[in-house]
Image (cartoon, rainbow, N blue to C red; front, side, top):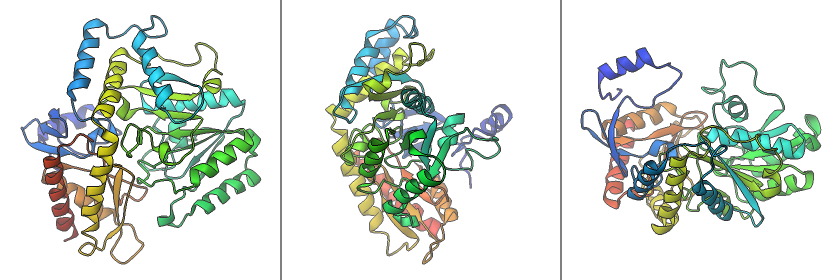
Amino acid sequence: MTVQTSPELSARKNAAIAKGVGMTTQIYAERAENAELWDKNGTRYIDFAAGIAVVNTGHRHPKVIEAVKKQLDAFTHTCHQVVPYENYVALAERLNAKVPGDFAKKTIFATTGAEAVENAIKIARHYTGRAGVVAFAGGFHGRTFMGMTLTGKVQPYKAGFGPMMNDVWHLPFPNPLHGVSGDEAIGALERLFKADIEPSRVAAIIVEPVQGEGGFYPVPEGFMKRLREICDANGIVLIADEVQTGFARTGKLFAMEHHGVAADITTMAKGLGGGLPISAVTGRAEIMDSPNPGGLGGTYAGNPLGIAAAHAVLDVIEEEDLCARAERLGGRLKQRLAGMRDQVPEIVDIRGPGFMNAVEFNVAGTDTPNPEMTNRIREEALKRGLILLTCGVYGNVIRFLAPLTIPDAIFDEALDVLEASIIAAKG
């Protein structure tokens, strides 16, 4: 059963908006506050999606709102490439200091995560003079042509859109739950270099430290170090796509901090703006400086309102110690789910660092993914006032992305709803 705010609104949506814009729910937001939102009928929901990891600091955090209002009273747009502004420079300085890597860095701003990825590939190709890019099955890097070419999931992102871009190669993602070890993934890379493309023609390897849309699978311990060694040995740029993992979600400001090595380029978006559109690319200064003036940028890139919001987001993460809170919330969630395993044998895995967590369901006693039960859980939760998202190549994973600022009482309420929804969906 689909929960709808209004059949009339849904009919208007169907008549006015292209069906390619998929919608997880048919509720229409009227207002939101921290981890709660209310629809057009006044029905209240607990938000465990956070705009897909965008409002990590909660809907309408007072400090973010205050910063945006202050900027709104000053100016909203000049285009930094025409008339620059100081807070753009200051945010670049902050990210250069915070992004992992003990080396000089520089930053550019864009508007979306897909733009950040596109720019990272452009920069890596320009710096190396090479064209090849290696990505991973199950990865998600956006819906632009290069973004969907890099993305390792056909449905719904690639199907029907014709030939993808040239010189992009996919490897199996190291995922022991699905039979791919770190050694096997590295072996596939070595075979790629032997059979399809020589490493001297590869500009970059791009990887999510925790796959997002692909199923919330973390990179296994030691894998990033091996990628780093291979990139160093062959002059390849290592790109960490931190669009979904960034900004305290995994218990660190950036997920790469869990791995003890730094990427050459890091892409960011989502949680950086606290609800306003902004993305960033930060990398080694000599790599970032490779393109000529005018080769990077965009009319709305680094819009002053998004920049102001991002400064406030970084302040809130520090002042409220949201990295530590992500660890506490994730621990409680995983403990609650683990307590259900005897009652729900369909649960095959509970995972994720910090508060970037997921639970995966198979048909009980088999290795067969169970997307039907997974979707029933999502629908049951929505009827009970909890917004959940599914993900994974097989659609059998529920991912949890509540704001890191969610009050304890509301978090406890959500866990009760989640447990009831799983039991009801099990039947």
